[in-house]
Length: 193
Image 1 (cartoon, rainbow, N blue to C red):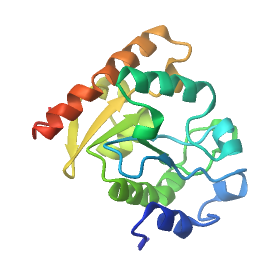
Image 2 (cartoon, helix red, strand yellow):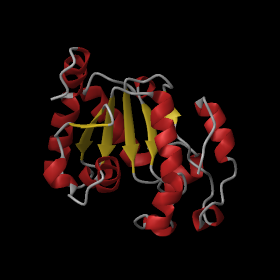
Image 3 (cartoon, rainbow, N blue to C red):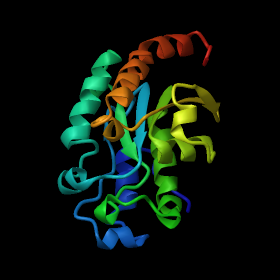
Image 4 (cartoon, helix red, strand yellow):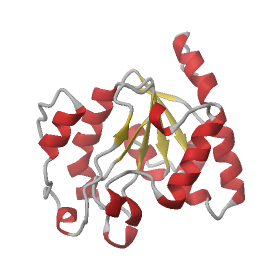
């Protein structure tokens, strides 16, 4: 699928009232993405959940509150970053994304990344990490490691939702987000590791 938009607003228009896969028929609201269109840091999650489907905004509700707290540990606020998901529509019952859904939405995510042009892409959880790193390896093995992908640094962390009831993951997430300023400083110096 060739996309021609040269701005995020244009890309959103190109996406339209998407029904390229069956999720377009079951969603309430398409969740495109939100944030600073020139962010140094972009967060990539899996898919909208119930609250996101109702509001049209990524990461609201309990996971969104936790994400705001985590950003604070990295010296950031939501307005500093751009947030998007692989899928733009909520899978029914918050089930895992299907391959055809991921394949259908991936060009739009990649176009968002290209247009925002962040220095650091923070992948939240398994699906985003596996997509961005083109691997089957799980998040537990990959979290906290920076990998250069097509000239861009990718930093996998646990998904905030996974840590809501798991204190150990929450502490790990706090530590991982606290590293973001140091990572950004190292990228300015040309060292991604």
